[in-house]
Image 1 (cartoon, rainbow, N blue to C red):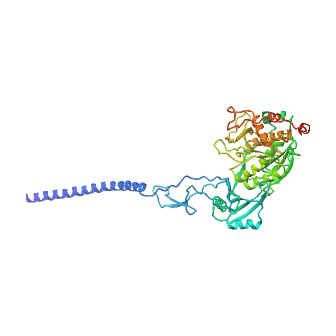
Image 2 (image 1 turned 135 degrees about the horizontal axis):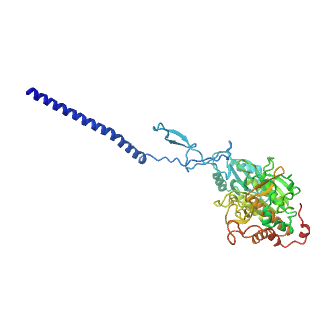
Image 3 (image 1 turned 120 degrees about the vertical axis):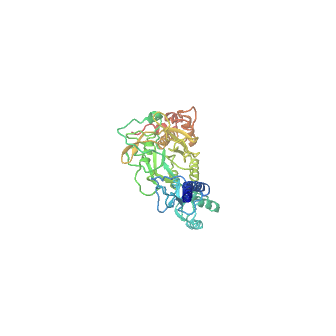
Length: 490
């Protein structure tokens, strides 16, 4: 019995030890499951609350058509205080379940601002300073002179200067203005032609704009004989049969011997074609001014080049200046346009092809310029046409047949073409009575326009669509105008 009792006691103790070990094992399993979960939860809270948030920002798609020059440094980051460049942000590698080591990635710089020339500043100085004076001014502001030209139009000299260090264009402009040694300083803004890509055309479709604007009837009164229209544009094919005998002068403001361009040739043709096509003012005289050079993103020019072109147009006694291009507000150009207006020049520009949400574009939005929007064959507004209170008048600008380089023809659309139609109508009016003022040309164009859209003036069509017959009929003919301007060349 004693042995039996002892065995029983040993069995009870052994069972108790086993139960204790099982309890420990259960607790260990529970802890093994609970601790990682609690740790993970705590680490997650720590990551969200304790660590700094990394704002990577939106992904930036770089436009493939933008040209990067090895000689031009392009600035621009989303962060207003990016620090040293290139800016590096560290991100977790998202591949696989294991986050793995962190790896550094460079952020993509924002697309370069293509509204002005990088690392260039345009400076205006009163009168005609000497080279020594100009060089001293350049040294004082750590700039390199690129180009200069005196403009009798504004009685001043404009300089293109390059910024060779890391200063921004706007910072240099502020420095120049604060220094008080210059009349004005600004960005050398970029302007672009306002025409959609040309489409191939078969045969000779009817020129619907002729009937819309009643041009054949208007030509019984005036064909724009001997009125000089300056076309500031890309290169014009002056040998095209449609332009035979109408080119009175040419000027290459770029001076790089680039050949004819579809845009400039088209605009010249809308104004003065007189072979297979009927231009708006077929007996006018054109000054073909090449201010826009062909680029991958479209033909472009700058403030300085356009000012040179304006100066040439006035020196050659242009009566109308057609500007089928658009860009940002430009103080230097504003002064040039005001000087042209003071000399009685009619200024006409494309309203722009940037669409309904675009801000006003220039020179069309300048108060001295007649801004023209575009309509189609159904008198609807061209979808890409700019709107705004600065729009003065509308004209056909969709699917317009016009000349192209090498004796060809093209079908194209845009407010560029609309502006050319209105420039042609202005030429008819001036030929009818050469004494008419620029202000009277504008008021007559608007008062005789055919109302479209909401009744009265609106932001889409301005006063309405230009009516050539009504506009010319409203002008009292000068005594000799009817005899000298009675028929069109065919």
